[in-house]
Amino acid sequence: MFETLSDKLSSALRNLRGVGKLSEDNMADALKEVRTALLSADVHFKVARQFVDKVREEVIGKDVLKGVTPGQQIVKIIHDELVKLLGEGETQLNPKKPLKVMMVGLHGSGKTTSSAKLGRLLKKRDYANPHLVACDVYRPAAIDQLEILAKANDLGFTCDRDSKDVPAIGRAGLAAAKAAGSELIIFDTAGRLQIDHDLIEEVKRLRDTVQPDEVILVADGALGQEAVNVAKAFHDALNLTGLILTKLDGDARGGAALSIKSITGVPIKFVGLGEKVEEFEVFHPDRLASRILG
Ligand code: GDP
Image (cartoon, rainbow, N blue to C red):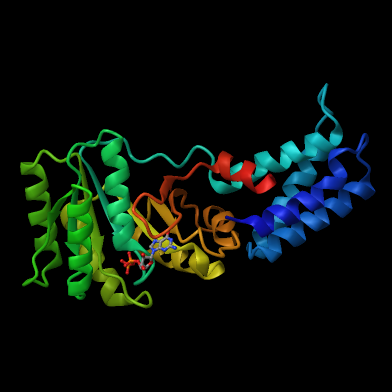
């Protein structure tokens, strides 16, 4: 993940790491390279500019710490700014139990897969009897897919193949989950190829009925800036509480992961790293920042 960005940033910083004294000149060159590296990873230009400005400000305002070279210090400052950009300290789920999570997103973003992945992960983290509710009433294949995933991962499951009444399905799911003593209920909603009025209205009706504690957008990280635009539109309509960024295993250049929090204000909470159900992780801004900086 993010190998290209990581390579570019390390080469931008390589010359600085050993530097004994930072000068306007060597810093300006390095920061220019950092900005270029971010832009070529498809990071939003405003985010890249603000990032570099912030780092410059920090470097200028700081006394050099004892025991580290100025070069090491700038690397540390960049690390800390990356962590902030990625949403430091904001990746926790609402601690409520039972926890109701509504998953939204465009068709093909990985919503159904991520619903099962999330159920499986949280089951291991002491949420009793996670329950999946199939609210995508337009694609029978999506219901089948969710059912297969629920069975394979020992998760509860509710659907109604004869109904298009999404709020009623949501209510039935809640009742079944309650009867099973479930501490986690995940609603997998329908997606379209683009965000449209009907889709949003239907999701809002479900939201008003089941009153989720978390509204999570599943966005395809490989889409880069487009994923950021999608997140913005869903957040405007639905007040998201978090994001799952999927397909970061592919050739995702990292732009979406690095821009999405600062452009939308919505933190990434989990990431999808492959098609398999176990290829899914809690998002850790500090770990990603360290990985990016190599
Ligand atoms: P939905 O239409 O949003 O419900 O999307 P699906 O869950 O059906 O996923 C669409 C495709 O993306 C499927 O082929 C999934 O296996 C695949 N997919 C989902 N998440 C990931 C991921 O993190 N990495 C990769 N490589 N593929 C994923």
